[in-house]
Length: 67
Image (cartoon, rainbow, N blue to C red):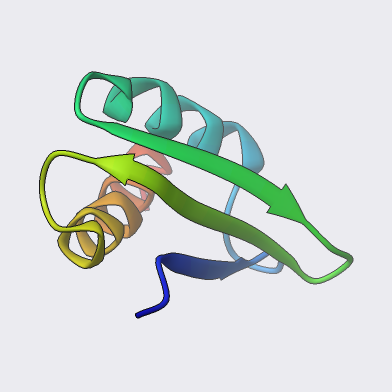
């Protein structure tokens, strides 16, 4: 099972992703890599199911962006 999500740079804000990673530190270790098109966020370890963490993480980033 893939524990990563690719967030497009055309839409997602890097500072919001970094803020979400910091907020999730209490229960998940998430690392971010990037290429020219995407921010790739990977759950390295977590207490809850990594797939659930990724779904909620993506929603949290959107909330931080104040869309």
